[in-house]
Image 1 (cartoon, helix red, strand yellow):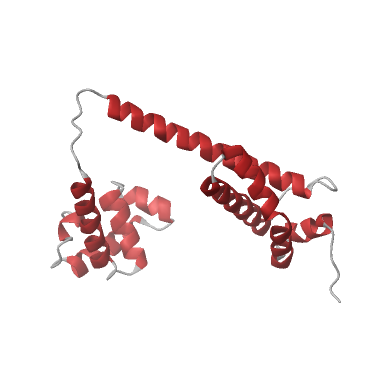
Image 2: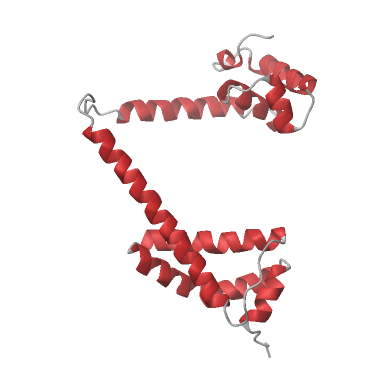
Length: 192
């Protein structure tokens, strides 16, 4: 016979990273969180995303050991409040995007040219570049991406990755050697 735990006990277990407690709380309360998020946003997709964000955040904090205590008997309400806040943030974000699109479309100097072809070409080009970069070990690829796309200096990359500048230079040199005859060799620039 399975013993049913109350929400407060499950919450305490969850605070120590107990996956079974998380699963049980999700099963009990995800529908309520979804309902609150849906009623706030009037969007099924937004409610679904808000519910996922709510529980993902709870799990992330639980595994990090930073999940706060909740007053006795308030677990469901706390989760619903978090879900509502996530929905509110998503609605506000969507509103900002919509206003930006409206401002861009309202600019008289812009032509309403169809640039879908350009976007698709850029995506295809990026897929080809990523396919070539897949030949590199992750440490070398990370350096290439930070230097070529991030515009970071060797010192900045070393600081960000926690490695000496010499290590950054050697990783970039190895990447240059590996990619010298590929279509992306130009990304790596000249050796310094």
